[in-house]
Image 1 (cartoon, helix red, strand yellow):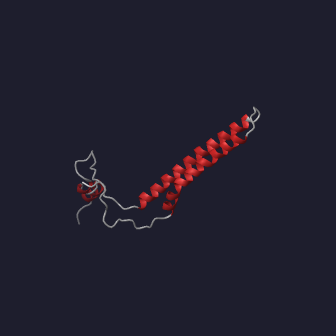
Image 2: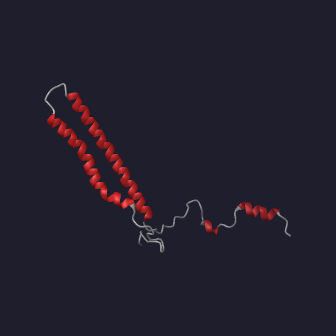
Image 3: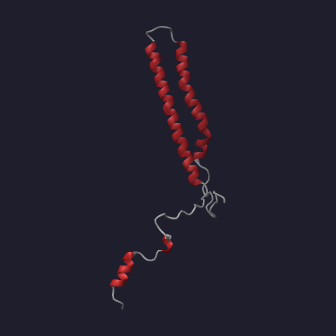
Length: 127
């Protein structure tokens, strides 16, 4: 049994768009967006004069850089999930497995007319 049986006639009808371009650039964006704030912190630590008066400013800069890196990771992950969703939605259609409802003995197609139509048919006199 092939779990990924494609529907005939439902192949990719749209060309790859901006999501593929973004997807290819994500590793570089993730790397450089994480590295630049941390390089800033390292450079600032390296150039700082040893003293207690500057320690608060250095610590505040570190916290800001760590916050920027965390926000950048969250935004990059969100962008990656959006790209994946668009790529999956543009992909081919697949056949779904039949899943009969547990509370019914017969499928919906074998049920007959709805109860409202049966009541209307019995209530109206034949002409």
